Amino acid sequence: MFTLKDYIVPESIEEASQLLNQNRNNVILGGLLWLKMGNKNYNKGIDLSKLGLNTIIENESSIEIGCMVTLRQIEISKVLNTYFNSLLVKSVKNIVGVQFRNCATVGGSVYSRFGFSDLLTALLALDTHVHLFHGGVIPLEEFINMTYKKDILIKIIINKDTRKASYQSHRKSATDLPVLAVAISRYNSHWKISIGARPNKAMIALKSSELLSHRPDQIESACNQAVSEMKFGTNIRGSAEYRRELAKVLIRRGVEEICR
Ligand SMILES: Cc1cc2nc3c(=O)[nH]c(=O)nc-3n(C[C@H](O)[C@H](O)[C@H](O)COP(=O)(O)OP(=O)(O)OC[C@H]3O[C@@H](n4cnc5c(N)ncnc54)[C@H](O)[C@@H]3O)c2cc1C
Image 1 (spheres, rainbow, N blue to C red):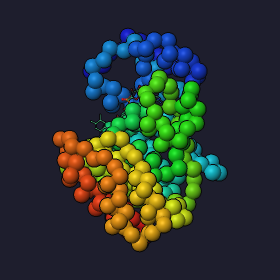
Image 2 (image 1 turned 180 degrees about the vertical axis):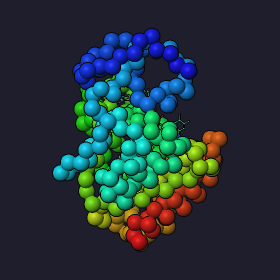
Image 3 (image 1 turned 60 degrees about the vertical axis):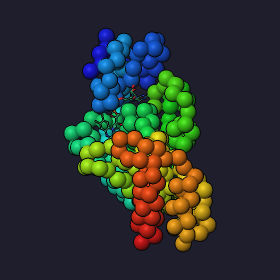
């Protein structure tokens, strides 16, 4: 279990940022589910729960998800159940259990950029930006590959387009981490194939997405292209070879679901 010397609930995001940068051992607290797996001794724990960042807001052209929104809020959100064939809802509903999802936050999930992240894989298939206190608003794709800098993730912004989407994942048992996760979307004729838990971080299969955008009937070629343009690795959940085969199956299922 980790320890904190002090626990602070700032009144403003500016104060939170100031506190974060005061000492390299100060830390932002999300739902604590990941932090408590470690045994680090932190100085100050900064709790953002008084800053009103726990809402999902639908605007005219976007959906904004605050960093303190829980995975459970995503799962039961009317807005997120309306758009993108419930892509985000489907991506979180296999994560551990309801009590866990009641605590785990969007901020902790996205800022950590875990290779196995279901949510990141899904968000990447949409037109998503992250809003960082210092870093400003940047595309998620850029954020995923940035080096880790101390900053506060304020919210996620998703462009509200008419995209159709599908989420596919494979787990060895119901509550385990995914062996592989695939999120696919089609906006007009433009396809996006995002593959996560490879076991590395989610990435867009660019050439495969482009191939499908020009030749939507070429599903098999798109599957083969995706596994040849991306690196797959081996860990306790599966071998690289297994993941490559799995990717072809999950991509095909996703594309077929969207075309149905
Ligand atoms: C046992 C277990 C099983 C899991 N299984 C899955 C799974 O199957 N699929 C999946 O996708 N995920 C899984 N996860 C990950 C989980 O869904 C969360 O992503 C994870 O717990 C982090 O969220 P949190 O709110 O608990 O963050 P915390 O543990 O509180 O924080 C994690 C990190 O993020 C930082 N942080 C938090 N909020 C912010 C912010 N707003 N700005 C900047 N930094 C911030 C913290 O400082 C810390 O470094 C699992 C986690 C655990 C512990």
